[in-house]
Length: 93
Length: 133
Image 1 (cartoon, each protein chain N blue to C red):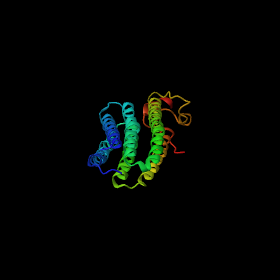
Image 2: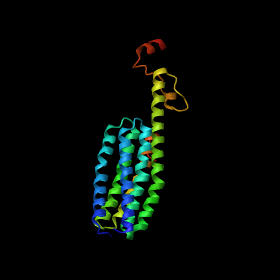
Image 3: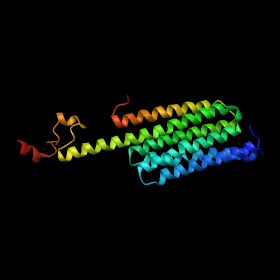
Image 4: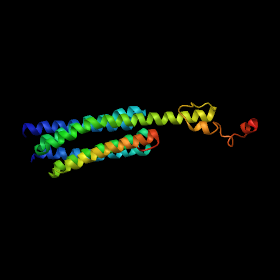
């Protein structure tokens, strides 16, 4: 791990920006005129959440948060496919 | 400031730049499919840059970060493709249902419910009910 204050400041700034960018994605979920916009917003919020979990693990030096991010990415992929199948066919499986 | 930290700072800035670019594109682009194109940049370029940056800083968990990067690079385009295909089929189904309810000439292969039901709702249009009787 690093003790450089510039790198630590950059990590904290990246975490702040990544969390703050979830607000426009939530706006796209609420506003979105088509059904693809809402699914896109959920997918993008999950991607930003994976990035913020990894940055949090790097800042707090908890290496097991990478496993949490991996599990969240896998669940997000399965969830996106299930919602897409439900929208296109009218049934989940 | 060692060389690893300089490289890590570069990749962190790279990832954050693509995060901001993708979110601005998702807010400002005019069409739903172009917005899908912008959100693909967030998943692949932005998150991959962020993973490389964190991997150069905390070198203990670099293997798991590489696994996560490969997984994201494979699954994010698949999810975007599934979303676009689902939206296309949904809008086509709605358009076919609307056309068949207006003109009474729905495509019989795509809508199976028109075989059982009359294409025009006779309760909603009383003139047609009188003409048929």
